[in-house]
View (spheres, rainbow, N blue to C red):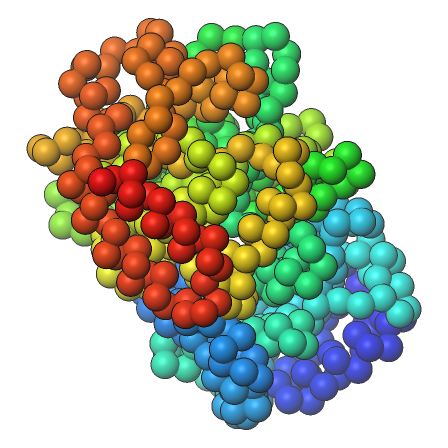
Length: 594
Ligand code: SAT
Ligand code: MN
């Protein structure tokens, strides 16, 4: 471990942050295994990391009950003009926000060590990758960053003496006075949490939370909120999308990028093993895609991350066996339950243990009224450990995208699969995407909200301008643009039961998409898009009632007409920054609905 770097800008910034936050010590991270082990030993000693007898080199953490998910209400896009942040972001003038936050940062690392984490989003040295440096007072964050990003010496070398980086300042916001006993999960109360972005300066300031996207600043803060700004300026795309490769029985490859809101099954789809014969699926990423038009005129995607920060509850050998096999060793678990034999457990994993310690550290039995694991409990897992990680997942050139998918959780109205009539219609589908809210954000669960491109919490500028960026990318890609589809795995019957088995059977919808790209399967026109005709979807070997299929594929004109006023209200938010081409799409849909 060296102290200081050859990069003057970096050294000056670290000094400035240290003068403000006043840590007891500064440690520069080298990304080594020894460093990870040291951090974990420290966390174990503090009682924060619980080693798991059943999983080598794996640890369980329990957070403060107030610090369990992203805090959208406390997340800011701070630009000189509020108009540039747009109607979907919280906004405060940069000078004002900085004044408030400087007050909080003042002395906030007293009694703690400040870690300097140089990291690369994307393979080190790739032309698509970008470098960031996170300063944090949380050793838990250091360990997670080791898994989620590429950290250390090689990044410093790539940075060199004059290279640029995105400065990411993080504090849990819990200074320790002399003799004060540390909390098990130190953090600041909700009203003092700030997840702030200054896109005009490519700057990230996060305060008060130690959890997930609030604290691992390479992820949503950099790779989405700041990167969307860079992508817009530089003509590429940063999207909340999984990336996967599907190979058909003839060996032809299709690359898919799919956008669903947090906790709607991106990790499950990314690692899905097809139930249809002869098809193969490999995972490239489960959360974020950076995409650029390359020399062949096509859009190529890389996964900027190197790990999965996945939702644990619901993950099982039935739903996602590849994730389960990824989780055997070297994993950080957060807010799962602890079994008596030293393993983790969560709702939906397997039969409930007779006794466990729940995520709040209390005794738990199946008779307990509360869940043993928090619904947003997570695993942090190295991507390279996934048995179906694509051999090319770190190819610096990325993979050429054939298919975009949008979707969300909808108990009603939205059919299993729909294809857009055109690029503009596909952008309309993305722009109007809606989903029932989940526990990935602090707030009410199950409310329907418009979440365009699954980016509402992650876009770093005005949403209307972002729609225009999508339209412009389509113009640029022309006939080489990916085809666009919309899916809903979550439609329910009148009795409230899921109509579609989901998981590996989602391959049936993906197969239809690939065949649409190849022009080997038909479709029927409906008012909301193109849909499989009877017999177009491969349902071989699937035992599903005819009535279920009918209900899944139903386009209820009454339900869709009822969506229109809500879409109009949603579009009205964007004022004159709503592209006329999207308004036209809405008018055309209204006409088709009659
Ligand atoms: O906490 S994260 O933002 O990283 C996870 C998610 O909500 O997708
Ligand atoms: Mn996500």
